[in-house]
Length: 412
Image (cartoon, rainbow, N blue to C red; front, top):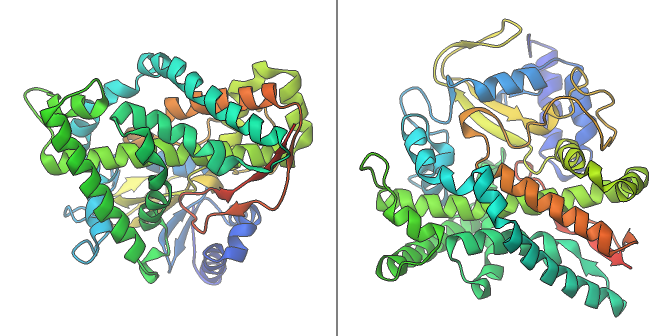
């Protein structure tokens, strides 16, 4: 059922307006609960259709009539002529519809199959052990450690960096740059300053264009070289597609996992009973990671446009050319699907969280992110019998890409 006629529309827009503020984001779970009392799909003045229910969100994500571009082919981001960040993002696979999306995904998907991810586990373990050794040495000296800069960023960027051939010495400079670029996905960025996002886009494009030139001359055993040579029915990636693909793989390859690790660790520390259960029974780890994904999703929202009329499971018709903001975080807290959704229950056995999306745009690196998270939490709990907050966590200012800037810990 579509809600949003007066006075409900004012109520939904008021909730959405609050969600765009720092104070609102600090109590986002309460706002989601309030939206759930109003239905699954809402008409708003601010954001078109707001999708908050799990079943409605899942249906939109799965339906190919809900695409990334408008029926006439225009992208969701309409100001690309003014912003290099918009132009870059519009060229990525993330913002493509079939048949282009199908072709692009086919060319890169082999690197992220279950078998390929399993083959990366020795590399992940080697990198993780070195980072944990560093944290342990600092903790032994009585130092407070920041999990975000000390591990949550460094491990995923090292893994995707090795895959693509980005040298380890150059990886640290990308964290803020990627965060600046990903700000373009935030619902309220249209009213903000995009200078940092555009600068990040220009820098990333230049970096990967140079990496491509180097690999054309000196190929290596990395994904960049493989994509340069990739053929699919005699089809190659164009130069623009290749640069955009590498930027997307690199940025998405660590930011989501970074936030999963940070959000997940904070959730465990805020629920000591569940942390104790996980310590006592590490076999719960696969279900625990799924629950951490659900409880505090590293991605909270994803936009779509109806390319044709389509019907939701409850019979609601979404007309052509309507923008839909799918609130993944809200869907993961839908009380119609998840019992006591406000509680962290590590052995929860209910619906799969929508944190990685669904349908043709399901996150290509979801399997890799899950493996990294399981290994990180397993080893953190094994190596440190005591993990405590050592200060106030600091969130990033964004809603869509949802994570922490700092998570100060005391490790013993």
